[in-house]
Structures are given as C-alpha cells and as structure tokens.
Length: 102
Image 1 (cartoon, helix red, strand yellow):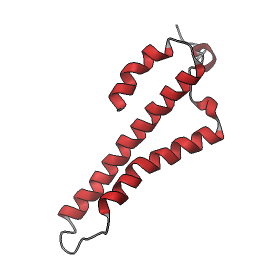
Image 2 (cartoon, helix red, strand yellow; image 1 turned 90 degrees about the vertical axis):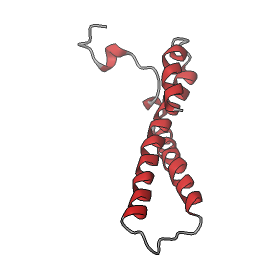
Image 3 (cartoon, one colour; image 1 turned 60 degrees about the vertical axis):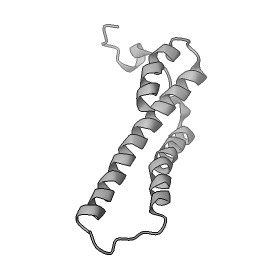
Image 4 (cartoon, helix red, strand yellow; image 1 turned 60 degrees about the horizontal axis):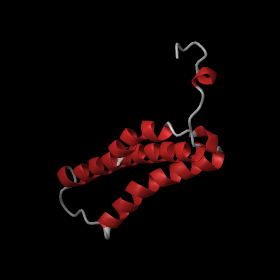
C-alpha cells in the first residue's frame, strides 16, 4: 500500500486538486504509520515467541494485533485532520523554503 500510494502520488498531485492532494498525503502518512506499527507489533510477537516462550496465551491475539496495527495509525491521522487539515496538501515551496532553487 505504501509503495502504490508513493508511486501514484506525484502523478495525482499534478492535477492541482486540493482534495485529491490532501487525500493522497493522508493515505501516504497512514500507510507509513501502519508499516511502522506493524513492525512494532512484529517485534512484540518475536519477544513473546523467543523470550517468554512458555505460558504465553492471549485470547483473540490476532484480532488485537489487527486493531492495533490498523487502528493506531487511523487515530493519529484523524487527530491531525481534526487539528488542522492544511497540514496535508500541496504547499508552495517558496513559502516553506524561500532559499530554494526551485
């Protein structure tokens, strides 16, 4: 998901549609956070498998991992959108970095 959003992001931002740009930036941020969250969950799983080997049982373990892996990034994205939706989008480079050569 991260690779597909990253590869299509520059092409879709060329349409100069603010809603499309905000959506793509939001999807890129979400997929990157989801990848990091799943890596964290994988490290917890390795800890449980290799260090705490015996008597490790969590009811509905996969369901809890899925809720954490997809839900935590969704909460972060929702908070960012609630605070200020202008954090996402296609900003002018001259406003952000006036010393840029572009």
